[in-house]
Image (cartoon, rainbow, N blue to C red; front, side):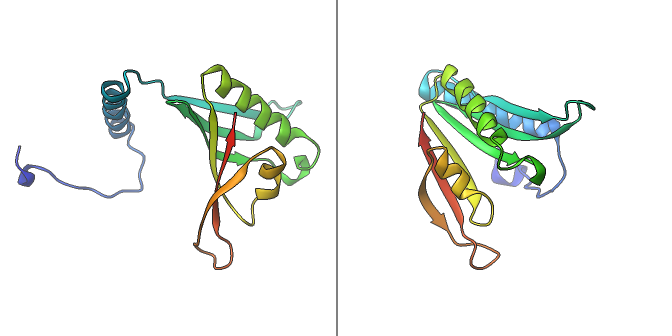
Length: 143
């Protein structure tokens, strides 16, 4: 196919079929290059004990020996009492079972970098972004 046979489309809409194409293609490429592909999602949910409704938790993924924490949220009422530590420890234990040796995350300085540092994460790099004065931090931890 020539370059004229392609169309590039930008969107903010979810497209499950398109996501499948990208995931499958990358997985096949990783398998060719690394000899295996092991990307899997990883989630730890925190639920209200009465309603069973999910009220927070962690979303991430594991791939080729790395554990990526993509999103982590707890309501204010649950912060500072060990639940966050429990969530992180649960996710890291599963990542280790999957063969991961390093955890990676991005956070903003107004979020919870001190919490992650108490969990053993260290700042790998800083990226200036908006809002001014609140850089993003890339943090890692050896598992």
